[in-house]
Length: 161
Length: 251
Image (cartoon, rainbow over all chains, first blue to last red; front, side, top):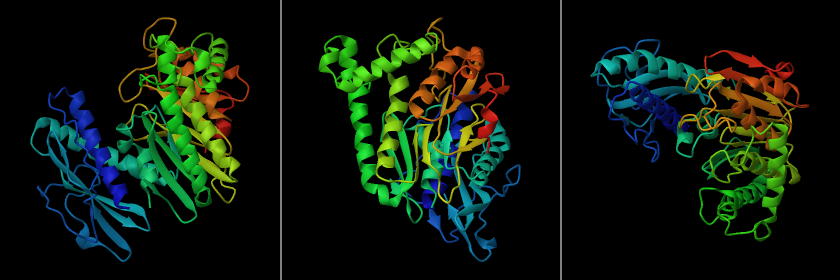
């Protein structure tokens, strides 16, 4: 389960990197996804929240650790360092399924960040949840490289508990 | 990395420049090892990116076909047949040098899946970097469900197909941009954002997907003419089409 959230956090960091590339920002991090090492924390550990704002869309900003009901576990992903600053998400899991998503840290400095925050987080998190509910066994798509695999949905499937 | 639910085994192997994901019964662990060793042998023998591979040395003219692994002869003959069937849209020389990768990956994955079938597995799924061979079913008579990535929306699925003993291959604009060249023009194929072909074995299903992508808008009629294969495509403008029998695979 730990790997799942690391993968999802990596996917988000990857999309942030992709968007920054598309908006022609010169500094795109080559290693924004640091999903190896596994420093994800479980069991309602709260993580620092850099801003009290709410992410546009349905995903709250800040830890959900204090709102858990029986059978739920909060899992915090690693902080992914992007060109705009640290990105970190938290998932609430029940029976191995994602039931809620919160954003612990997001970049909040530039005009581009606002576009990213408006667009990328709700969209990508929503799509990740959609893939999970589609109950698929594998994903067919244009070939990914060994490095691109870590950000792929197939990677999330391989790592599910 | 290996894991999975009770009775099942999941394994992801970095090989052939991508990751091959296995979902198989835990009792087939030994055959998994054999299949993984096979894939690494294929990589060492057929990679155009390794100077010491048979394919590289054959392409450079420093090794005769007779000196190469006998499987290369088999691959060459099969590539010639697909090339003829596709009106030259499938080719081993699109990159300007000898490169049979468009055939080899699907062939290697289908064989890896067959090795696990031979071990008595009633159902397993092998995904070679987005090209999938399913054998049997996923258990309890349930069909395998394969999501088709939406090439225009990162991490989203365009649709889901389901089936037993079937293969799903998608060719498209990869993460590094257009990489499939129309051999008749020398230019990257741009009509389609992706095309998915469904068939029984991944070897030909994958090769046909590559040819279909290079063909672009002409691919629809071409796949209609192939017995036992169906296709679904998303155009670079975001429209989509499917061949007449594709709906049978929709989950």
